[in-house]
Amino acid sequence: MVLCFWGGTEHYRLSSAHRQPPGREMAFMLKNSKHIKTFHRLFPSYSSSNHFLAFLLSTLFVSILLLSPPTVAAHPRIFNYKEVPEHDMQYLPQWLSVLERHITEDVPDGNCTDSFFNRCYLNEWFAFLAGIKNEPRAQQLSAVNRYANQKKYVLDIDNYGVEDYWAIPKQFLAKGGDCEDYAITKFFSLRWLGYGPDKIRLLILQDTNLRVQHAVLLFLTKNDVLVLDNQSQEIVSQKQIHHYVPLYSLNEKEWWLHVPPLK
Figure 1 (cartoon, one colour):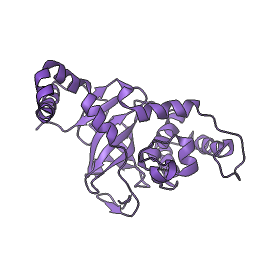
Figure 2 (spheres, helix red, strand yellow):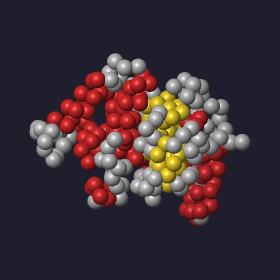
Figure 3 (cartoon, one colour):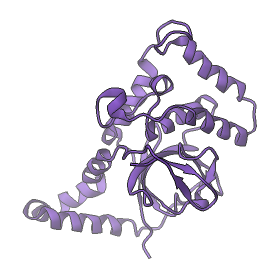
């Protein structure tokens, strides 16, 4: 298990503390995607008689669906993968929990000498965001990326006693976290700064160098996709990264399944 840091325009350098982040949701969503469920409704005999054959055929069925003419996107393809929009958020229980807890969980009073996270520490985050509110976009993105990346990398099992837990910002800012926790805090930081949900996404991906799953935040522009990564102190264009395979991405309203283009 390794944590990699940005080391140039072509490769990531390897260091020593990364683990595989949430992958169970991806398998659950693939199994329950509307396209897969459509296949099972159309071909129930295959679904009941041979699970492996049903999986292969359902995968082919999804590929056929993707042959339809693409819609005009407001941004380039994410790592050149086609995206299939999904609007049913029930397949993202971890993310729904984050959205709810971020709004409803209260932060206790206290001061910045206390060992527990309180409103004093929360105000530090808000003060940081307010301080960059009027900065140019590039400076805002860089500042948000570096602010989150200074927090300690900690495994979920050590922080929360479970293998997979998605932390809200107040938890991450107090205790550190793993890759999706960095990305979540960056997501809410940019939302506070006024970035619309159509411009930012949390992306779950496969790192083919490290052979683990990973999570980053994306900023989408008309001509590029910028990556805010806890493995890099710099904002990186997706054009400079060749070892990331997108799996699914999301915002507050919908999520997208990413599939390779048919050649």
